[in-house]
Length: 180
Image 1 (cartoon, rainbow, N blue to C red):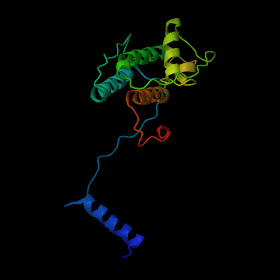
Image 2 (cartoon, rainbow, N blue to C red; image 1 turned 90 degrees about the vertical axis):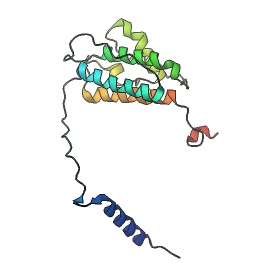
Image 3 (cartoon, rainbow, N blue to C red; image 1 turned 90 degrees about the horizontal axis):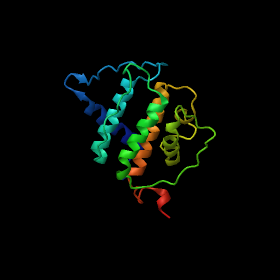
Image 4 (tube, rainbow, N blue to C red; image 1 turned 180 degrees about the vertical axis):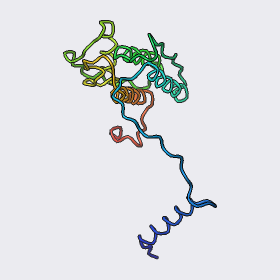
């Protein structure tokens, strides 16, 4: 018995349309809020809210509690690169007991790294060596003290993905480079 692809697609389409309908017609979705592009730097309040969401995920997924971010100065002020680096270092240190994988240290281009404070030098080098901060990212090599929304989101995403890599053992069934 042969089934024609066109007939199969039509049946699946009808099922999909039928399941999306209710008594009053098609389901209506709530209107989406418009995305506003802002070139303003990230405020401490926005960063604190972001790190609070991350801490909730760490508690739920990793069963590790990380103390909330301690804000220095006004919540309406812009967060600096130094504050983000210090927060990343603090979270990294708190989550280290949950690490199941220790990645090989990456090569650090020390000539390109820019430090706002001398005390952040060892923190930033350790984060870059571990792959938690990009070697040539704005957080590591930027000359501007504040971060835009895009740069902050990029840094948080990069950091969070590396935390995920270090805390979860990959399955040899689904990871090709573990097949041998």
